[in-house]
Length: 273
Image (cartoon, rainbow, N blue to C red; front, side):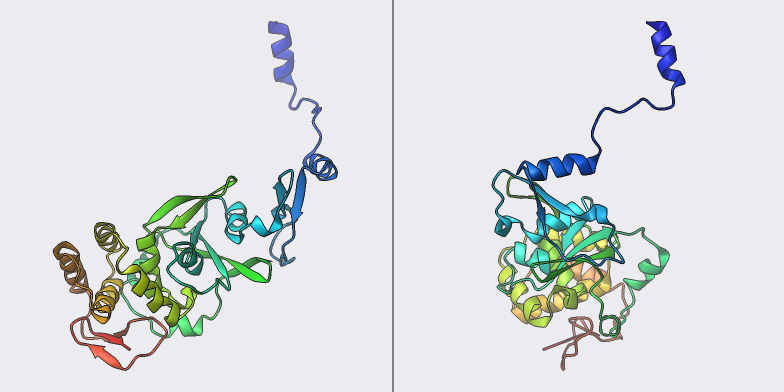
């Protein structure tokens, strides 16, 4: 036995008796056990290895959710923005695009950025991210996000095949006042807050705002509460006021970055509709 083990150790590789992946896949397709899910893929960006196949005896292509494909493309990614809004039933608008986020490494540049408003940034940067594929004429994007401002992630079950990594209800609401144009624009944002104002967890939202620690986001959340006539609990109210005091209260900011409004909320120094 020792002689056999030593002989095996000398060999760098052992001959494989298994079929390679393309052969196995072709066999499954020919046998009716695998079915290709047709997507439009930018040939200059996405390698052929990102093709999608459904392993199912009786496939129903109408049941393949775009979010399922997004998660398959980036298993460690996080579904967010308009995709999360529709999933959480925060908007009646059908998603015209989808996002999955890849977390980037925190940097000093971003740490400074989250405390400094750039009202024209959202307007100048019209791109929604890197378009990775289009499914049923709906584009799907990959975007980098900083973990400093994305703190609420949960796992949700989507049918028998897929678990989705997605922003929580409260994180999704925060995202609307941080990146409103990625979330479908002002009409979707206001609809989301009107729908979500009675459903969100104050304790969880409070925890997120403390961890994010951005006076810009806190001021916008406070102004949104005022706009909707919502009175937060004492703990959340204290967090909003304490966090907002760390910023430059002299500079007025828009409730939604990249969009202009004409009324000033003097308490938060936020321009609102």
